Amino acid sequence: MEPASTVYEAAIVERPKGRSRRVKIVPTADDELRPDKPVVKDLIIRRKTDGKVIVRTPADLGSPEAMLKTVQSDLHRMTADEFFDEWKMPSL
Image 1 (cartoon, rainbow, N blue to C red):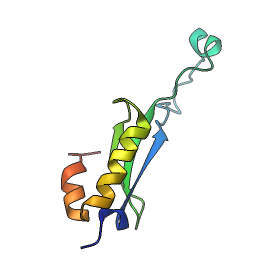
Image 2 (image 1 turned 180 degrees about the vertical axis):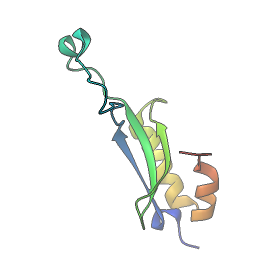
Image 3 (image 1 turned 120 degrees about the vertical axis):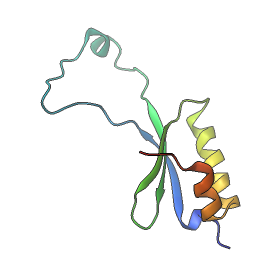
Image 4 (image 1 turned 135 degrees about the vertical axis):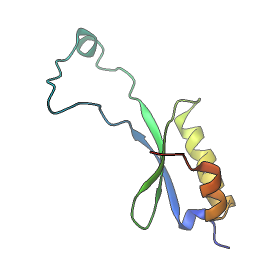
């Protein structure tokens, strides 16, 4: 059987901003005084065929790079079905 890495790919991405077009967001003093504020990142896993994200989870357990390395290891070690059963989320 082919490894899951032929079906899925994983990446660390910046979390999308939660801004609404209807609500005008005014920068806070914290935004102005701390431009180096840490960026929140997510681990995403998507299907290669259509780019559909099957997992999006905060990459906040230790190092995002370590999380990605773990997922990539599983992608190469497991079949696509095993990987999906292990990593799927109830709903996105």
